[in-house]
Image 1 (tube, rainbow, N blue to C red):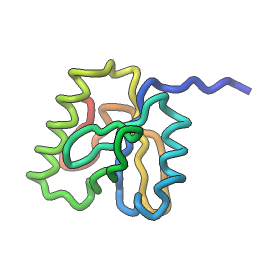
Image 2 (cartoon, rainbow, N blue to C red):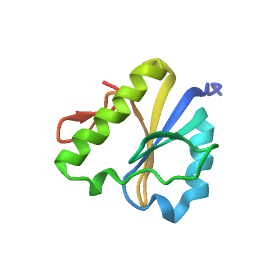
Image 3 (tube, rainbow, N blue to C red):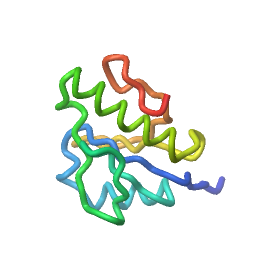
Image 4 (cartoon, rainbow, N blue to C red):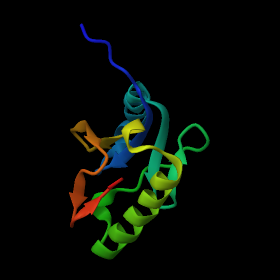
Amino acid sequence: MKKFEQYKVCLLMNLGGFEERVEENLEAARTYGKTVYAMTGDGLVNVEETSLIPVNVLDLTSAELFIWSSIINEQLQENFLKEDVVILAVGRKHRGLLPLGTPIGQNVRIGA
């Protein structure tokens, strides 16, 4: 069995329903990243420092999504190397990893 190597950082992305399974989602994120950040309306927030829920990106308007992603991308570029970060996208019934640069909607990419 191949050993899984953790990323340095796991970003939590809310696709609706995150709050229904908060602890389960946080535990999954800790499996993938040594440090976990929630992508909130205020930008990247370390989940060990505060318990903010990630912003639901599906609820954002086009303008809000553009501004929000710009804030997130700026923080990523200032603080992390692309190869050190993975996104854990969480919805009501699904959860999965996305590499940085994956389009999340309306030609918006996180970490690209």
